[in-house]
Structures are given as structure tokens and as C-alpha cells.
Length: 186
Image (tube, rainbow, N blue to C red; front, side, top):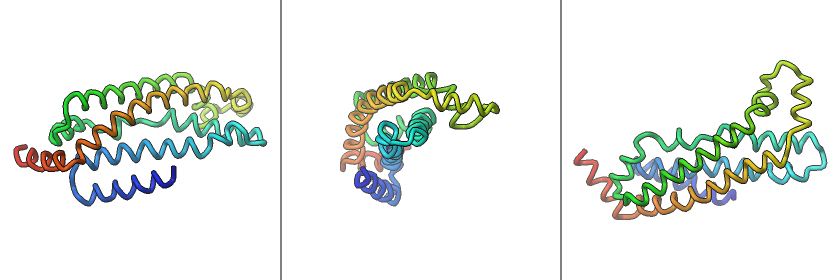
């Protein structure tokens, strides 16, 4: 996972140095996804198997927070469709990406709904009643948290498939040239 993250980071830096807004936006989306994925993977085993119950629950809370707060919509940006069109990404591939983003958002919203109370109470520590916080932590249901994570991962599989198609098209020689030519017309 770390090697993938490092490779994507250097490719994102390279995309930023080239100035193509479309590949910059796509690389940022990919890196944003990988950061969340890396965070979840880093604590997943501890959430399941750590001998210290408090550390298991803390790892669960990290997973919960990552899913709850993660928002690909803010990274995708409002002009992504325009950028993809300028790069001659076919409409059906664009539609596949945008549908996968909607599916990902629905999974995240579902997780947020399920995890709203524990998130506010024990992660953000917004509940002024410390006894209630401890009770919520002690009752944190690993099965429920991992159920939300499972839905999130199922929808992210769909996203990654569509994302790779879009990235291949936009980053191809044809996509890069089309982006530059369409910039002149804009």
C-alpha cells in the first residue's frame, strides 16, 4: 500500500508540474482515495485483534471517523465534467465515473447515518457527559463499523474501476492533446 501511495504522490506532483488541470484533478482524487484507504488499512488489524480493548475501540473510532468525514465530492470539484470533456473522455466513461461517485456518496451517507451518534459522542467528544461517552465507547459495535466499511469498500471498487478508465483516457496522448487544443477554443 505504501508503494502505491508513494507512486501516486510522485505522479500527482508530476501532473501538477505539467499544468494540465484535468490530470491534476484526477490525480488529486486518486491520492485522496488512497490516503483514506491507507488510514483504514493501518488500523484495521488493531480494530479486530489488538489485545488491549481500548486500543481496539480507538482503532474502530479511527475507521468510523475516516468513513464519516471522507467526502470525495469536495475533491472532484464542480468543473470535473468540463475538464473530462476537454480531454475527450467519452461520455459513457464519464457517466460511469459520476455514477460511481454517486454510489460512493450514498455508501458514505449510509455510514454517516449509522455512525452519527458515536461519531459526535466519542470521536469529537461533543457529549459533555463523560459517563455517556465511556458507555458509547464500551458499546461500540465492531460489526456495525465494519459493516459500514464493507459498504464503503464495495462502492469504492466500482469507483476505482471507473476512475482508472477515466485516468487512462485523460492521461493518454490523445487526451492530453485534446485538452490543450480545447483550451485554445475556451
